[in-house]
Image (cartoon, rainbow, N blue to C red; front, side):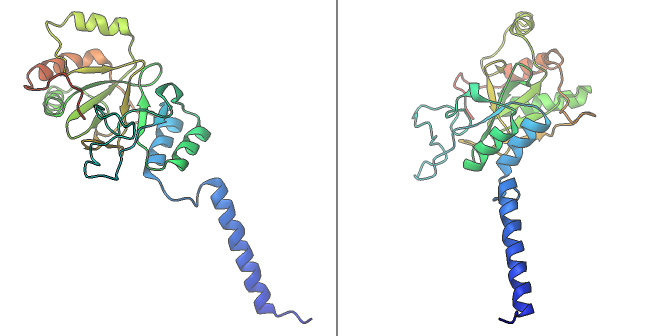
Length: 241
């Protein structure tokens, strides 16, 4: 049977397109773009910060903004905490991170603090904004700052519990609204959707020559953070995001 050149070229082109599509699917370049997956991969593979998917918000009811997938009606951090898998599963392994966020592309990205990862000091948003203004006025470099509508989290170099205890002992009073996220703690990374709204960068990370975000030491910031937290009225003891 005589070959029809045009039809053969068309068939080869279609076959090539199909193979290219399969290759892109296998390598992950053709899959639906997930901003949260990109955030998780950047944190895990470039910054070496261990991450785990968070409990997402439930979007099937009139109180969707406050309903957490953990189903706990008393959840104080809806959409902004680990659930399944648990925090101990946090990893920097690229294959695992890709698998998690390919299956749950909109899952919040939870950073497991402490160890070799950053620690964090969180305080009410009003106090956080005042603290940043003080740092700018006095020439203190605060490093990356994560914000929700109600709280700021200042990322710092990892610290030991003993170091924290010594610094707090030197303070006259530490308000309960100032919280410390060290080993065994966590914070939601920007892009995550919490019960109070979207998590964002208030201060973007500034990376060093190795591509890792620069972090300040806790003792350079804690006096101002304590002072501004103590000066913020009505912060209460319930952790609110």
